[in-house]
Length: 339
Ligand code: SF4
Ligand code: SF4
Image (cartoon, rainbow, N blue to C red; front, side, top):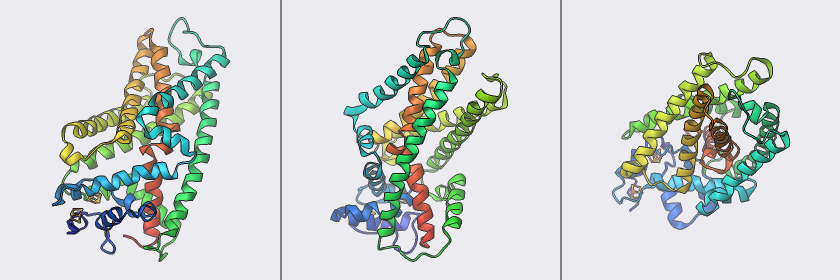
C-alpha cells in the first residue's frame, strides 16, 4: 500500500531516506543488489513494531530479517558452508563434520576410550590437542570471515544512496560498539520490550562466556585445572549460562506461541537459537557430570564440543553472522552520517 506507517513507527529509522518502506518497494521491484548493499537492513533490530502496525499485514520487519538471512548466504566465504547450513536437508552433513573431526583428533591423540576413575575431560581429549585443533579451525574461520567482510564492505561503498563520508571511521566504530554493548537503540523499540531484555541477556551471557572460555584456555596452561565450583571464573560462567538460558527460553517460547508479534521464524532462525540453547544446556550438564562423576560425562562432553563447533566455527555462515555484519553496517551508517 506504500502508506509509510512502517517507516513512521520505526524509532530506529533516520528521518532522511527512512526504512523499511523503501526496502519494501525495492523488494517489490526485485532490486536484489540494492537491497544487499543497503546498510539499513542491518540497522533494523527486528523489534516487530512495523510488523505490528502495518495495515496490510505484510510484515516489513520479517522482510528485512529475510534479507539479512540472504546476506549470510550471499557474502559468506567459502560459500558452500553457508549453503550447507541454510538447508535442513544438509543438517546431517553439518553435524557429521564436527563429529568426525573431533573423534579423529582424539583417535590420533591415542585417547579414544572412556577413561577410568574420576572424570577428567583432558584424559579423553588432551587439552594440547583440543587447543591446537580448535585454534587452527578458528584461524581458518577468521580468514573466511575477513574475505566475506571485504566483499560486504565493497558492496556498502557501491551503494549510491549514502555516499557523503562525514566522520572518522575509528570514532564511528567505537560509537557502534558502545551502542551494541548498551543496546541503547534496541531500547527505543515501542511495543515488544521483552525483545530488548531477552536480547540483552543473551548478548551479555555470550560475551561473559566468551571471556571465561579464553581464561579457561589460559588456565589449562598456567593454573590448576579443572577449576572448582566456587572459583570466580566458574561463578561467572554459570551466571552467563543462566542469562543465556533465561533469554533463549523466552525467545523460543515467543517464537512458538506468540507468532503474531514475534514474527515468522525460518530454518536459519531455529538453527541459530537451538544450537546456542543446546550448547548452554550441554555445558551445564558437562559440569554437573564432572562433579558427580557420571559415566556418561565423556559422551556429554563430546556433544558439547560438537555444539561448540556448531556455534563458533560455523558462526559466519549462520545467523550468528549478524554480529559481524551489523557491527560493520552500523559503523558505515555512522560514517556516512546516517543517524
Ligand atoms: S509495508 Fe505496510 S506499513 Fe509499510 S508502506 Fe507497506 S503497507 Fe504501509
Ligand atoms: S522491525 Fe523494528 S527496527 Fe526493524 S524496521 Fe521494523 S520497526 Fe524498525
